[in-house]
Length: 280
Image 1 (cartoon, rainbow, N blue to C red):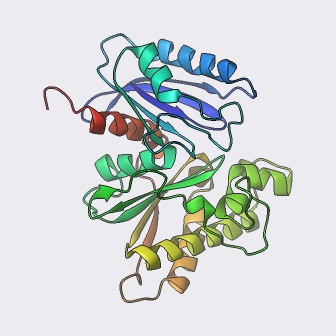
Image 2: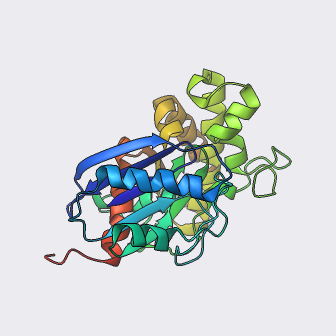
């Protein structure tokens, strides 16, 4: 059972051991400050999808969260602060459950079946309601809260971020930030807004590439995928300008190959990593 918890939508799916989605469902994320109202929506979605023969659960959720995923406090879900998500899902499903950051779920998915397959060093990113990341080095996903690329400062003195800082990537290019700045949803953003956002993404990726000696960033999430090639092209152009060290020159930004499937395939990968298939 795979579960993706986002600021605007909830999605669940049954995913087999090869990463194929068998069945799925989604619904809008309730706008609420009541933890139980949000949990009831999640539980109902799980019930809509499950058949009872699932053997493990995997959850991708916005952070921050406890290092073991036991409790979550997503910045874009004020209803949940230190919410015991892992135990709630495990108790509801009756199977072992693992929880990790939603952007790290995309990194797992793209490394398993997507654009980073076969790569040992890469950054996986999600640009949606918020901006997050997961880092794979030497073939291993960095654990805990490592990878919060959404809080790399790309515009000193820029917009105030929900983390309390200013000029964070998330505060400048997330769907929430774009809507606040333009008065329109990110999907309706004009070409200049998309190009500017892509430039800032490329700036953040260059910092990560220079710091960690990696040459690939895979970007998913509804905002990034909705903006498409112009967004990715602007990011690549900025990355080419700013990643100039011998080991980072030529680094690439690409769209998530799994598209909208990436969060759920990644959530499944989180579960399978903790409880491998018994027949595998």
